[in-house]
Image (cartoon, rainbow, N blue to C red; front, side, top):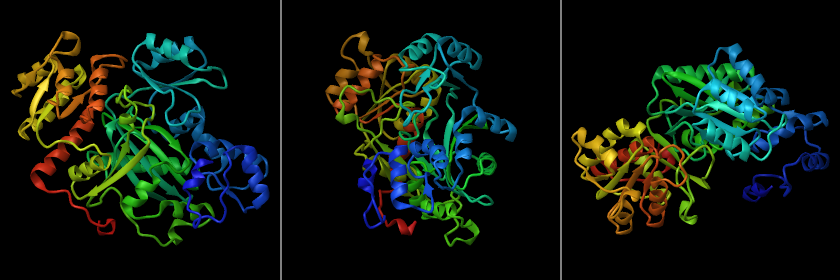
Length: 472
C-alpha cells in the first residue's frame, strides 16, 4: 500500500508495503496474531474486505461487518431511512439501458449516474437528457446484475454538508458539520468546505444532528462515521453514510483541536466517550472559520477543462483559519497559488439559470472598483439592474473577443458557469485559456460569492494576519 510511505515510522510498530487485498491482509494477521483488526481508516477498500475477514475468523473491531453492509447496500440502507422517516433523494438501480431510461423518467431529470463500487467519484456524471443517459450507459465498461448502474435524483442548487462523528453505542460526538462552499454535485474532495456552517440556520443544524444520531444508533456504529447531506428548500436529504473515517477527519481534528482518530480508536477497543479525557467542543458555534480548499492540478494539464463535477480532480488540500470568513477563504486561495486580484477587470459570463444570482456578485465587484466585462446575454441582465459593463463578442461571434483580451492581459478574473455539459463550448475554450495565461477562473456562483467576500475583506477591512493555531 503506497500510503504506508507517508506513515511516520515512530508512530507504528510495524509497516507493511503490501496491497490492500484479502490474501495480503490475512497473511499479515497470521504473522502478527493481533487482538483485532480495524478497517475504518483505509477508505472504502477495507470495508469491502470486512465480511470476508470476519468469515475467516478475524476479529473486526468497531462497527460490525453486517452494519457496514447495511450502510453500503443501497436497498437495505434505503429501507432503513424509510423506517427512520429520514428523507433521501429518489434513486434506483439499473441493469441495462431500458431499465435506466425507466428509472430516470420516473425520478425526473437531471439525474446523477455512476457505476456501483467506485472510488473518488470515478465515472460519475450528471445527466440532463435521455440521449445523454443512453450514451453514458453504452460507454459504461460493464453493466450487469453484479455491477449495476446507480441512478439518483440530482438536487440542483442544493447545499451539500459533510458530518464527521464518533459513536460509542450510547453517546454521539459530532466533530464537525462542514458546509460545502460549492453546490451539491461537485465531488466533496474538490469542493471547499467550512466549519462552522456559515449559511445554515439553527433549525437545519438541529435536524442534521438528529438525523446523524438516529442513523448512528440504527447502524450500530462503533467508532467513526461520515454522512453526506444535501439541503434543498429547507429539507435535509441524506446522500450517503459511510461507517468509516473520511478524508476530512484530519481537517476537522485540526480545526477543533480534538484528536478524532485517537478517540475513535479507543471507542473501537471498548472504551466509552464519557470515560475519555478530551476537550468538548460544539463545532457549530466556534468564534473563527476553518476552511478546507482543494489543490487542483490544472496548470500541469493544459487542455483539461477546469469545470468541477462529481468526478474528483484534486491532488491535495490546504486549510485557512481566521475570525473572518473572507480572510480565511483568501488564505486558502493564497496557499494554492490562486491569488485573486483586488482591482482590474473581471469577465463575467454565466448560464441562464445563474443570471439572477450573479447580479449581487457583479454589484459588489463594481463597488470594489472592478471593470465589468461580459458577453451580450449576461451584459443585458447586468445593465437592466443598473450595473455598468463593457460587452464583448463570444468566441464564435468574431474578433476581437474575450480570448483575445485574455491573451493581451486585459482580464484579471473570470467568472464563467457552464451551459449544461457541452464539451467544446465557448466556456471550455475560455477556461483553458485562463489556465494557460494564469488568470484566476471560477466556475460556480457559490465559489464566486466566497471569492468576492475574500477580496472585500482584504481590500477594506484588514490585512491577512497569521498566528499560531493554538491561539484560535
